[in-house]
Amino acid sequence: MEGVNIKTFLAHLERIDRSLLALMSKFRMEEKEGRIFLYTEDKTLKETVERFLKERFGDGFKDRVLVRLEGLEAEKAQEKRETESEGLNKRYSFSNFIVGEGNRLAYEVAYEVAQNPGKIYNPLFIYGGVGLGKTHLLQAIGNACAERGYRVVYKSANDFSEDMVEAIKVGKVKEFRNTYRNIDLLLLDDVQFLSGKNRTQIEFFNIFNHMFLNEKQIVLASDRHPKELKDISDRLISRFEGGVVVEVCMDELTKLEIIKRKLCELKIEVQDRIVESLMKHTSDNVRDIEGTLRGIKLKGVEHLKKNTVSSSSLEKIKLYTAVHFGIKPEELVGSSRSRKVNRARHIAFYLCRKLTDASLIEIARAFNRSDHSTVIYGIKKIEEERRKDRKLNYIISFLEKHIGERL
Ligand code: ADP
Ligand code: MG
Image 1 (cartoon, rainbow, N blue to C red):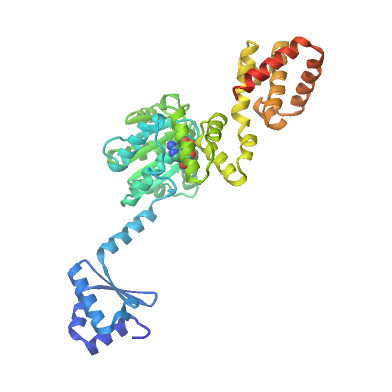
Image 2: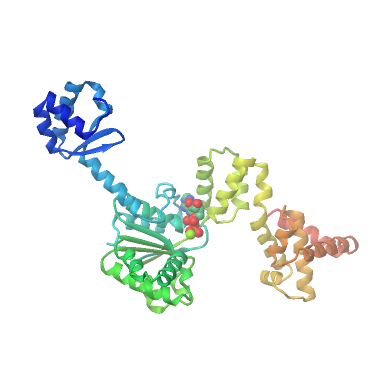
């Protein structure tokens, strides 16, 4: 049985076993990579033929003639459907989403939607701040459904819009529309970017209605509640609100859980002290938390302080300094040149430099200053005055201690 193909295989059977040959008509046969696959839905037939083949050809046939249940065929079809889905990233699943108070409801509703797409919560609208897991949940729904054979499209509203503009340009609007008529789930991310794009909104409105009427699931994510969306038509907003609207937010316990689980996933062992420090020095944005943890993995814990101290600490320094001087934090980053505000701003620059590892450029950016020479000037001024002015010296010492303890 060298150089096996269907023709030589059948000719061989004809010579050695005609009854076995007769059974072959019950199989769908395929040649692949020098092997023959026999497909059937009948388990008994499969086993019988496997036995016959073994008797006739010994164990050696296994490598060359394989009998498969059509069930596996079904799986193949399933795989094909999975590849028919678009924009999914397998990295995101329900099982690797960490659930806490702030995101429990969103998680549960998303999970339900994945179990019964189009049936219960349609549309589902998830909103919340940056890096809190909205895209993760959309993708988790998409992956769970694609695995079960649903056709899924995940798209950011921006890409949706660009695709549409392109379709118009090349005269393929019909094809564009058809894509969405043939899918089971549409996951549209960052819908705030539909803002002001009237043509896209009209097109999306039609797709939305078509899908909705056909009980196809729509899931939307946005950085804000539908009511807060700007320059999006009222009829779309009312569609967005027509199903379930859930928020994702962050709380201390969820954050702690996320930090611990991610440390574990990255196989980083650290003392509780470091976990505490991570809690304090990272923002609520899970993407930033992940970045910081990867930094630790790469460069060790020593790297932690430098990397994490910056953004949230700068915010705190701004806040405490503003409170101390009885002004608003926005005034510190604004353009006011009043003596009071200017002085407070310079002191805040000075404190940022003293209490964190932020670079001058980072400080300038945090205060909305395009040029860091302003920061250098402010810091120098305070350094000088501090030496001469005892009252100022006292205030700064106090702030250093007071704020330093809270970073
Ligand atoms: P958003 O879309 O809300 O801006 P993402 O879903 O992109 O945020 O999340 C940013 C990163 O943080 C992703 O890598 C995501 O996997 C991760 N992430 C966010 N929330 C969670 C969570 N609750 N559990 C696990 N990972 C999370
Ligand atoms: Mg996102």
